[in-house]
Image (cartoon, rainbow, N blue to C red; front, side, top):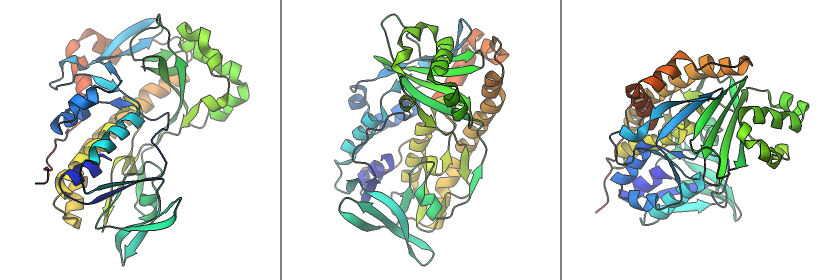
Length: 384
């Protein structure tokens, strides 16, 4: 959606395919980081975005046992919005779509699912799809696969995937929020458990981390046992655990960390999770995808879709992808799995204690999470 907006803004003709009839899918990442807010400012959209209902997080905390530790402080970042905005992804997508529709070259097709690629020899020349009106084809000078970690486009293009491994999965669910609850968005560690709680105003968006493939073991022990585990993690919410009255209230995110060796072939480019599936560590997936879109638009807006241009996009974005994934793999293997394996009361690791003690370290952590490696800036123009 962001790439479509940027290319249409620069005068290109763009068709965006969305297989659903609306954007209302829950359990998607909802964090809009300072790097993305800065891009919205550069596009002249920030003031309108900030009027949307949202929560703002200036500090991240981690709780070990009964003690909370500040681990990232966004308030000193050199940006216009030194905070993370929590907003449902459907609202953000709708916001981008409405602004993209201002440009005559932008076309959004809803309930239009890409099911395969069209080829002219070895060159990708478009997509095949289905809609309520039947099968269709869209011919294009460039096809961009932005269809996620289970990408049909990258599978059809037979692009090689390098799997970095992920020993965890995540259960997403909601709990209602009461006035007396804590305010902070935080991660809660201890007793063989890890849960992240995002303050969404009138409810908590919760992510409960489990060892990969262990959901069926949890289910076999019963819903009461699972609710008891949650209560140990968040005792203040014990009075509302009956809100989880069915396993259907929990959504499994099968975590993947991988990337394509080559993000492109003639006539095709992959970005976002289609090019590099990210761990939920740091909540940076959406923001890296948007950075990909900006970098791609900066290169492609003139209409040069040559192999050299597509390689330039990958070169630009591969370094921050590798750095971020390397950090995520270290955290997964050396922190998260340690937490899940040890049911004894867990002391805060040295790194967390140092972050709590030294504000400069918290600012460095915030820069890594909030801005990332090599943040992008809008380089594509507005068409005359």
